[in-house]
Length: 301
Image (cartoon, rainbow, N blue to C red; front, side, top):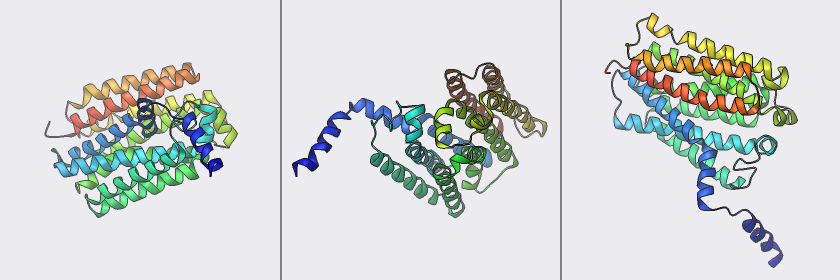
């Protein structure tokens, strides 16, 4: 009896960080900023589709569906990546054992389950869309990740999907939402390719065929920069068709300049520290773009 319980007590004593460290670890695991931004993207999509503010129910359930679904799949991603992260990022919550694998599985299931329930309150089509998004991310986390570009595309599709999901949630898919979807897809595709540059050692060891692994860091950086430039050029499309108001320009112009700066920085320096900084910067540029989409694409503003 004693021999079976002793290792558990030793293990608990060894990995028993303060509560504040555990909270920080869980926040890192679910990527709180990313979840908030993707939830906001759904509400923005709803507002653009309606030409006005969505109802409280539409906003809350739309936000919860996207943010919690991303959180759940991000936790599953880290579970699948735990061996790679022991090489690339040993200080992350799972490889450092601040969060246990079983706890992470439970968290992923709960978050994903609540997200699917939330989508059901928006109607049958949003529910089916949420289930498809969950299935795609489950595929990515278990098999698709090793495919490299295809895996990047699956992730980027789900990141961009909130704009279309917002339209589906309020039964109105405006053409402008498809443009914003494409912009978000390209920008995140670039960010995913850049992420592969920092993960080359672990990805190589695990047979993950990212562009950075198969072609090298410099070509991956150049492809990333080119995609950022394409996203900037595409941002001029809505004004050409008179789909947005003048409120579109300030935030989107700032986001475009930011993406161009990040492109230059990445093309010049592919060290892991520089790439990680670019990844963080791009989240800010995407948030600015989101503000511009809302301001310019919503007739009520």
